Image 1 (cartoon, helix red, strand yellow):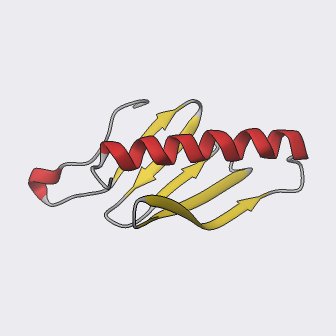
Image 2: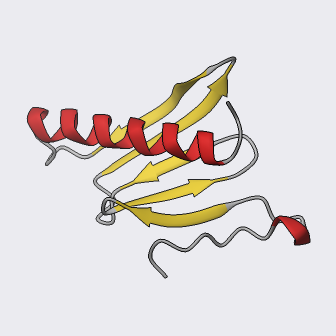
Length: 89
């Protein structure tokens, strides 16, 4: 269901999947994955000291440069917000 985390820390499950800004956000104990619903863009982030670093990024050839820039900004913001919600920083 959109906007509802699936994590259940009391059961030892520390991953979640939610939808924000029309992007899928998956998080576990070490990584955050941001993806578009169509699968045309995916980026994985990991904590590094006090900030996130991009571990991998993939986009298909139909994504233009302007859209790619917007996707990267949205993904970074979502990943950063998720990291703060998870208490990584």
